[in-house]
Image 1 (cartoon, rainbow, N blue to C red):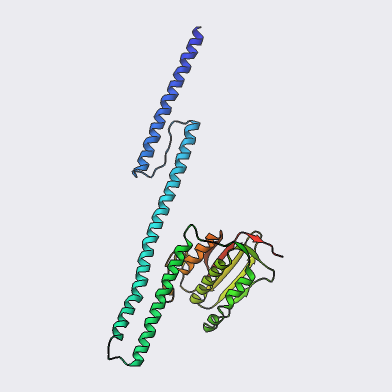
Image 2: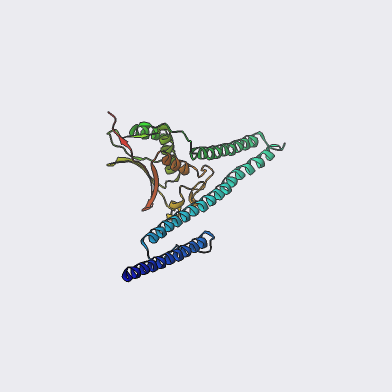
Length: 303
């Protein structure tokens, strides 16, 4: 009887000791979490009393802390991008607007010759067209990034579509004395996607390649084991790794490519469209060559 009583007392003592340390550890974890939530520390939760269930709880709390940090970083990045986008669009609108107002004031003068008025009218028209392009691109990007952007997913023969787009740039290539290297296999390569969206992506990438190439442009379509890749590359002289990181940001323009003909939205639109189609668009700089790679995962066979 004495033995049973001793065992019971000992078991009760162990149980209460364990409960005491568990409660103490919970209070300690709560305090650490409170410190983190009040931005007093970036430190994750650690434990002093090693218990399997407490360890699992600490692991899940720390996972949630990681998710929270990532969400906060994404929020800050989005806010910064929005501020930069507003600053950029304000600048890009203000510049041609100031020019237009200035030339209109000139046109109000009676001292101008008819030739001068004609020239000023041309300049004003060009500035207005730039504003039109800028506002169109900005509106298009906002529509594409909306949750309910409509896509018509259907079989798309990528070979034909790429060649169709390239034919539309024949004169542009000639003007710049470029002879593009076109590497498209004869076999039909098809994907499930939105044909108009794919066409827009290719157009934007080709425009970017023509506009900023320092000598050559290559278009290569390739079928991989479980994906299709379209790589559009061009030679560049002054791009660096920082430019590559920022290339798909709204309104971003590398210094050497700043011109009134560019809104800095073309690559952002292309990237957004690719993501909408569950594809990917990436950029790589290698040996003074810029590679833009579109990748679609879904490959289909069309007889």
